[in-house]
Image 1 (cartoon, rainbow, N blue to C red):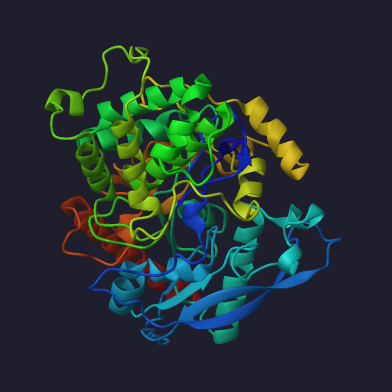
Image 2 (spheres, helix red, strand yellow):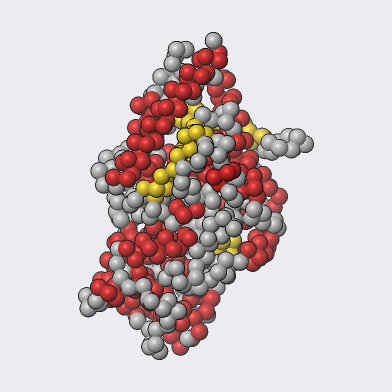
Amino acid sequence: ANKKMKVGYSILLALVSVCVVTSARVPYELFRDPHSMGVSQGNYSPIPFKVGWYETQLDHFNFEVEGTFKMKYLYSDEFFKNSPEKPGPIFVYTGNEGPIEMFWNNSGYWTNVLAPKYGAMLLFPEHRYFGDSLPFGKDSLKGKNVQYLSSEQALADYGVFLQKFKEERGLQNSPVISFGGSYGGMLSGWFRMKYPQVVDGALAASAPLLMYQNITSPYAFYETVTNDFTNVGCGGLMRDGFQQLQQLQNKTEHYETLTKELNLCEPIKSAGDVQGLYDWMLNGMGTMCMIDYPYPTNFIAPVPGSPVTVACERLLSAIGSDVSPSEMNFLSEDPAKKPTSSDFNIPLLKGMVDAVNVLYDYQEKNSCNNPPQSGGPGGWYYLACTEQVLPIATNGVTDFFWDQPWSLKENSAQCEIEWGTPSRPFWVPRHYGGFNYQRDFAMYSNIIFSQGNLDPWHLGGVNHDIIGGKDMISFVMKGSAHHLDLRYPDPADPIDVVRGRETEDFYVGKWIRETIERNLRESS
């Protein structure tokens, strides 16, 4: 089958949206597997949660739409300490594109460390159209039913919910600190910006707030992926392998051999099938870089610690030990140079399949490679077509992939086919700010933007303090992948992550104290 590439990574975040042949697909489908909710850190067990439901407006901005639906939220008051003299804080995770349990289980620094330290209530509202918060049940993504899915509607859900939650429990003086990772981190930052009367401070972890057209290069994502693999010793081999795979697109005489030697689930019958194999590898490598944590996890899929390093070790093992160090870690001085042999290197291509199976099949349960994908497009695909249009592409120069540039025109055309809805690629930076983020965000306060240099999304984040903004803090953690700072502390954590969490702790405590003092002064 001809597997076209998709646009827009589900930012976990992972992988995304609509089929487009001209732009590199982002690894978001794996990221939002509803079964990937476990935690494999040996020193960590998520605290228990309770489940609540809140009736929210179907459309917060159109008074002629009167419908409502039930929004799910998780909560815990196990550590909550509240008194008139010292109101207890509320920590709110701004739910993103997946079942909310997934984020509860993987935010251990907040649930298990900061919440008990500050005596905080924990609230995890689920994003509309994900998990169990479906306005139209199983038909939520059909036809016009999906039109109420947007970041603006989700933030309004959270804002109204929080105000009513506090009012019903007499917690009007309780400080509220939001936090989130990936798209959830974007929502957390925007929540503070758009609802400062509700949220007193925010952490936007690994939030690509600037990953939009004409702001960040579309090649930034896979440039980081290439650097991650190159820095552990196999960037040159990856480049050679992808060049050979591209040459095989039009060599039909090799299709049968390629299918057999790579143990593919479906036979290669066309250039489009080779493209599908390439997409599978591309997505796998991007996802591994996002979850390149220093210990085993099953956030997206069961993987070992440092999966990028393990993947490179598999590749080097597959081709044998007679490769010189310069060949192993060599990015060609002439990226356009193609392999001269008319044959192709089977051990190299098999090694690349072994490498991506660190993500796809580390437990060796699959009988073949690149199995057919099941299920239709999820809610993130709609968001990535309408407002979350995140340009991601490859060029074969700053990265080791194929030259497949970003095409907004083709992306928008495919979105029109898929959803019958045009893309609005500039809406997010116009609505929330970002074209000149130093100017746009200077009016705001009390937001931390944390990034990890291993995370492919980090170049699309806010990587500098906002000059003029009060407590508008940014830092990039060396050795950190996608929102590692949200996870429960582990002895294997890089020192920058340890220091990053200390910074977050300091400002969370500061914002809580300042808010309590202000609220008590104003209510007296």
